[in-house]
Length: 403
Image 1 (cartoon, rainbow, N blue to C red):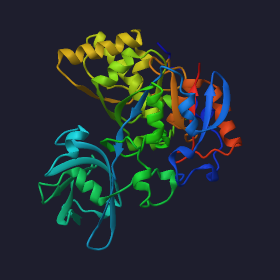
Image 2: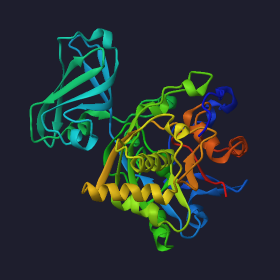
Image 3: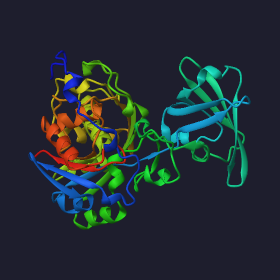
């Protein structure tokens, strides 16, 4: 159990990031990005295509197959004033994203609302949409101003909310790109294996993978599994407290099927997380397994739970406990939430390797990288800067293998 009374200072996890280092646009080809390979303290500079040969034999790769939704909905009042509604998380008829996205009548979401002062309580916002040559009227009403809850309704019950969002929303590009989304962002701010609607930010480590790379890895016998963590806007929330332990972590929804959990139990080599979201999901699943062993079936992992638990079990024991619980309850998948905060001092229970992009200074993601490879994070980022790597969501990649 870690002593969380000790302060961890944000200033120890910052670095200089000039604006010209931020990749504002993706490369024409996904796999042409640079790849920094960190292995047991040494660094090599590669091309992402080289990942095929760099993954150790018998490894199991875990990918996050969430699908980014066009979460920015723009409405205009009759006066011409623009109101932007940014979808954050579903409230009704269910908090489960897969259910809400298939709803065909009305839904309620917690949202961020731009220009909300110009939107009066009793006046709906209306947009006309064209979906498959059908004219659809979409209406937005303030359901609870204090809780920022917005009710959306439309006049055709053959149309799902997923189709509504696809027809009316804009790609939720990260704020640090400081530009409006363009048509090319629709396919490029999405992994080639995305499957389940719900994220408002891409799991960007996966943006480099192509069908050809995935096939090549499979031909080598590298195992792959998919899990889902619907990335929330909180991933961009900067840490504003000098003592990082005071930072309020965002909660994100996880959906993981039996096959993926089984793949961890059966893994013979390294378990490699494709992205920080996959890593957070895998480590959260471990703590859910610990909860089950302790008789607690609540799958909502709290921010500092890993640092407060006194119960230590093996990776296999934790994931086997989840499988046993699924069998007992006749479940094919587990659905939960996590706000796990991984920072230096965390002991990784599941992941042996991480493929990830280069993150913002002083962010929760930098802290996660520092927890994984220790003080060498500074060496990695300095090497990337010196060698002209492109940073952040549309930037280059790193493969971190501490041992």
